[in-house]
Image (cartoon, rainbow over all chains, first blue to last red; front, top):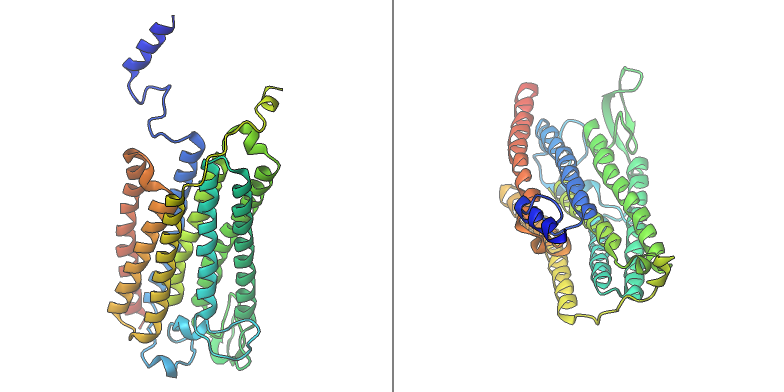
Length: 256
Length: 109
């Protein structure tokens, strides 16, 4: 009986069932294809940023003379120049660079956790997942501070002429940012900032929840009992993706 | 009950220092490239050359993350290409929408 079954299977070929043609489990494959669809979502966001930016005039002067206006697109390095605890000091992009550093480091500790999972080393998995979790929470805290600063704005603000939420044309000093107007540039600038970094932050939040789950289950021995650490690998794929997206957001939103 | 019998029977393999060294090396490359981007942002004039460097370094970083950290280079060729080939669609999306943006600019200003 069993020899018949084997013969039938070999006739079906590699895609006929009974084997893993891609040598990856169902869960890992689905994570990959989910991430592929997420790549499309985030790329659509960033391309939208590019299209809207190109539809506005660029700032033509020297970066040092930059003044915010809703007539042209701002230079990001002159907008994102604040740092916690040093009020009023011009530190262009330093905080964003720090956030990038934190996220890349958490990606490194994640890959070390996955490596430890391959070796069934529970102690190392727990240790590296805890570091990754800390990195993720630190990143989210940084983003919360950045959003708060962006929404509240600088002490001086910017005098702007714009159509307010009551649909009337007004000229007044604008502080910070909301969905109607912001002191940094055209309304789309703040809208895209909230939209893109917000959607990324949402992904990080989900990632932190998944990391906590993996950390807890690894620590109480669920994976040891299961016989493999594949869940750490799947959460790892997601977490690296979050880092991957940030690499692009850093370039296209903050640098260019 | 049977799952309880397996408890603690997983064999812990020793650390492979080659692999771990490789991970830290890639980490170093990623951080170094980010540092270069950061320095170039303030030392070079804004323009298409700088933007091309930024995009190039970003793509290098992205491929390191996908190939090394996400282990895509260790997967089967079929899986590798079924993730990479669909990204070709994005090339046209980028060209089409950026052109759209430029044309909206010409109509508006």
